[in-house]
Image (cartoon, rainbow, N blue to C red; front, side, top):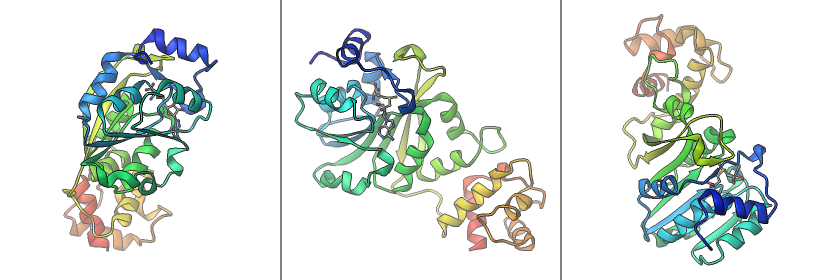
Length: 285
Ligand code: SAM
């Protein structure tokens, strides 16, 4: 099969199978050979790697991954794309294709063969409608991925990379950074996709921590505190946490913990760093 990731071949494949990009599945197919190559390079894919690809589409990125990786496992939700992929990628015997919703897959079952490989990497041009749930599903699994390289909306990457006291800072920034170091590796224009998305995109590489720099004794409590703090952004931390249904803490308990943390009673959640949220959780544990 010819190189898939350019406008002419992608157009011909879509026409041959009568495929129309499905909005409900966030289908924006990559048609820029440079960007496709860049994703593989940023992920440093080699023959020692097992790659999990989420949403192969018609196989443009999958083709490059199969060329470079030892093994590729690609999970696609859209059953209409399965016969297309079986055709476009028929020459690769290092590919396993799975017709499933990634959020319903057990990652350990999916990656049963991982022992034979030096590292396991996630690579995806993510469907924008479920970027955050997919990223959190991957990271919260605590599967020892080497890295996660994803094409996502620029606006989501801005939220992930935001610092305390900025408008973009929130639970997503803290959750992703608890598990990984996020690096924006390239900016991508809407003209690199068909159909064109309305927003700019970036390639984001998450270097997953083997050893987390910040650890809370009770991780679940820390994430509840984070969600509670940003649930009502404008409120002080005390009021945000007191009113949050996921927590059962009295005003006094929260005020004491904030004092022990060395913060003023009027502090807001958006002023706290990840290590301060972990420390607050440890005080309350
Ligand atoms: N990788 C292809 C490319 O770069 O041209 C397609 C990327 S497109 C942005 C997202 C792909 O994810 C689509 O093929 C879509 O059908 C698939 N997808 C959407 N939701 C999914 C889910 N929950 N699980 C697995 N695949 C999904």
